[in-house]
Image (cartoon, rainbow, N blue to C red; front, side, top):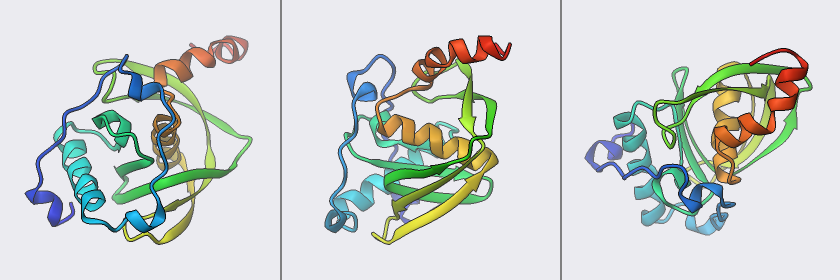
Amino acid sequence: MLENAKKCQSLPLTYVPHDILSAQAQAIPEQDITQPEIQKVIDQMFVTMKVEHGCGLAAPQVGLNMQLAVIDAEDHTFTIINPEITRKSPQRVIFPEGCLSIPGKEFSVIRHEKITVTYFDREAKQCKIKLKGFLAIVFQHEIDHLNGTVIAERYEEQRALREHIDIS
């Protein structure tokens, strides 16, 4: 965990059907990324994610309208700001996902097996990463949040596809 995050308090979670969870989050201007206010939010989000036992957390899930998510999965931590999926493999995987904004529920969602994402990190460095497996799923889940989609909606959107390939 980040050293500064140990000193921060967690943030209250936002739950479905709160409007902020279905809205497109606002981009963070590049020059604002390293500002103390944004850095504090990042630290608070890491604390909140740990307290709530999550592996990812998007800013709308704590009531903040900004393109920011934190991820801690498979021994890697990421701060992703203004992320964009630039490549998606045609291969898909189905994986049972939970969501801190929909406690106690799990949805089997179809995701791209491999993706490429560009984003800014917490130092405002532009990054590009190729992901596969669980990390690709987590990134897609958090980026969905930033685009105003929660897994319950993604699950419903995929109903016909799951029925077509006989997966429930």
